[in-house]
Image (cartoon, rainbow, N blue to C red):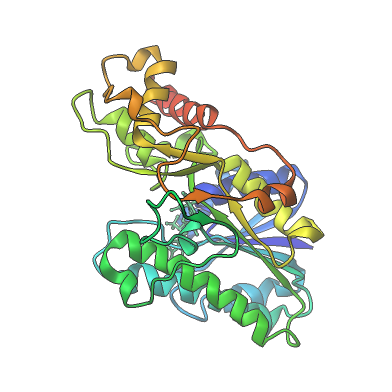
Length: 342
Ligand code: NDP
């Protein structure tokens, strides 16, 4: 039996595929084109346990039909990671909300149609974005946990691309739980969601280090690339390493205690100053080439605003998360190595 993973070309998904293959699973991945498939299969050394199918655009509700018609009876676990994560959008509905929501609903409908008897577990890559409350985010007396939901509506989240992306993750996750509630008798699967904060860490393959990286890693890359006089971006959030996020996706279908759970993946707070501090402290080759900013303005080890309490998730998973220094340093070391500057 196989694990199906949508959006296998993604930053997080490639780490998941890598961990699945290490554990000897048979993996079927989806990507938007045959060229992307050929490239990814080659990167994984044409591993005989890894095959792929084309699923062009998850905005179409029947996008996954062909894949599940052909392979449904071989698939026991489904990991749905494909979803747009970008802020350079002009049409919030078309580019973010619809693909996120329809992709999630569509894959569940295809399972129901073609793999209702074989699929036992479904893991949705959701996000802290489905939990965030913009009105409370800077309020130190507010605490987030695994039970909360982003209060934005379909209309209100279209205020700007960041809010629209967060809304897209809320509506996608919400529709998954609703689908299960309405179809409990028609499908056999259970759902778990993985809700990460900002995900850092190296690309699974050095060859994926391009001038611009995926949205979350680009935060680190931009500080490395923009020069000593560039302003340090005014951004604070929480961080988690991609290898832990991938591991949580495996736990989310392998373990019984993850059934019906939202795994809120965060190791703590950071701001952009903390990234600059880590890079300045740990990479001699960056001295004088990146901004110093105001080192005392970092928030590492404390909170810039609302507190993320993921005690329940940590208890369920039972493994230590990679810390800030390692996740930033490993991201930066790979970028510098590929640039020949380490
Ligand atoms: P990437 O941009 O690297 O991966 C996104 C994946 O989704 C790619 O495989 C992409 O395909 C695919 N995709 C996007 N839009 C469509 C579409 N319309 N139709 C088909 N496929 C599509 O980002 P990440 O790996 O960071 O993100 C993966 C998941 O993790 C997303 O669901 C994201 O919301 C979530 N997440 C990410 C966080 C982070 O900090 N990185 C934090 C929390 C959640 P292609 O390669 O062809 O572009």
